[in-house]
Length: 101
Image (cartoon, rainbow, N blue to C red; front, side, top):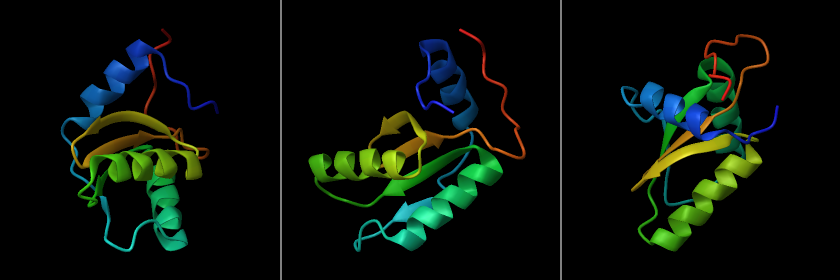
């Protein structure tokens, strides 16, 4: 699956993510392989998750969020402050049906 989303799909996913809470948190030790495995499992199960990144510097936080999206092959739907919303279509249990355009 390509992780490129259209504007309509991004709007739809932002609306879906509004009511969910952050599932995982990136701590002071940064991004580990265990964290990547947890995010992959959460994306496979839920498709749409929020991740809280605890870095204080904005540039470091943005780099960590971009790295998370790249390493999990997910689309970055939204980033607000310390929270990022990631989406990846599940291979086995597709729950979210995206609008076409």
